[in-house]
Image (cartoon, rainbow, N blue to C red; front, side, top):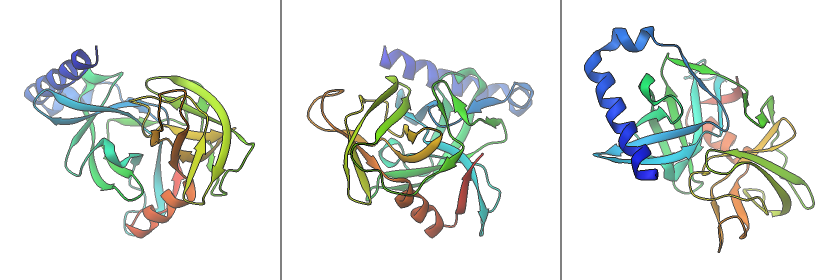
Length: 221
């Protein structure tokens, strides 16, 4: 099933590039927000299926006002094209412009055919909370693979958190929330999917990196 999804994504992207810009511009905009599934095209029939953490804009600095999405760093490398998993026929929605392996965070510069949204299925993101989560806080996430799941926080070291949320492949980048506040992203799990602890990068770590690379004072749209 995953290979079929990737093949359809690659074919759709290729077809739209042949049709031309006019057709793509005439199509409805693609809704995208924290919890949306994306496909990062790797070349050939290969793509990585991941989840958007959040969509928003830096409010100051050299890239003020630019619409971007955040996801996990291992999902893609700079220059790779991104399409929406749910709206593949609408073509490319952005390009990976930054990827960091040390904190596993990536930035996608979004095209004008994207309509940012704060709500994706079971998660609404209204603000970012940079306070590290601690036991026994209940965290929730919205992922393209396992949907909306919640679990207790085990601990946080200030950079990353560790929880008992169910996550598996494809949930990488999922927004981790407490209520309507974004507190981090999903990056990995240990031992067994859904049974092993989940771990991810905390919001403060993400925002600090965005500030460092020119996306200053990022705010969700």
